[in-house]
Image (cartoon, rainbow, N blue to C red; front, side, top):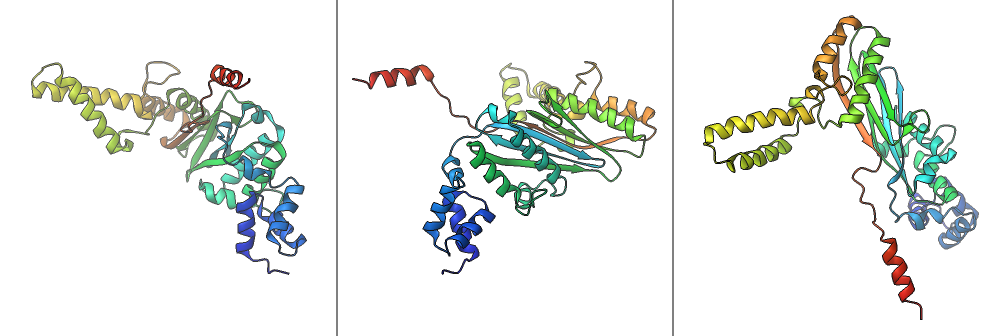
Length: 310
């Protein structure tokens, strides 16, 4: 009987995509025979995940979880929107978000963490789900926020179940004031973030390279007007201020009233909350953003199929 080493288990996982515990069991059942273990897993339906791993998974769910001064958001992808309505998939996404509260937003740590109610990892649980549901899935990303005093509030736009949907937002508010009123403010700001899609918290948070690119574009646009350089500088600064109002959360116009800057909304709310309020961080996940989806021309496919028949 071959020795069942960690490297042998790893090799079997890479060959089959099956979970670690399933690979260990397969190797034990086949006395360390690698190919026999592959066949054992195939017979159990646990090797199916590997064949699906190359398929694009851009659908699925964004899930959020909060616990007082901390919150987490995760994105779990699948191939079709249909799977997002699957009870088992929803349960996995919800538990992954809860688990992310303790893994600090590190998606690799989340994958390696013990899945609630089991002795195996979250990644192993997802691999088993892939085999059960029959679609490629991916625990794509995770972010966690926390404050020393105050609240972390979540919002899910068009939720299909509590804490589950296609757009998830977290916002962290630091304050020693009334927690319930602070949470109400956080919910309103989170709704604003979902709609307005800010890139940065404030001016100091703007990515310097993005700002320089924007300045360069604005300067070229201003020079095209034929104005002198001193006028161009003023034009660019005016447009940069406008840029800040578009990308910085605290500089944006509050979508709920359409006229007040978010910064002022926070200042005004602090009076009712009973203590200064500081927005320390936020994050916004939109399902599938940044994933290249394969485009299918159905008419062309039909035409090609018809042309191939003689």
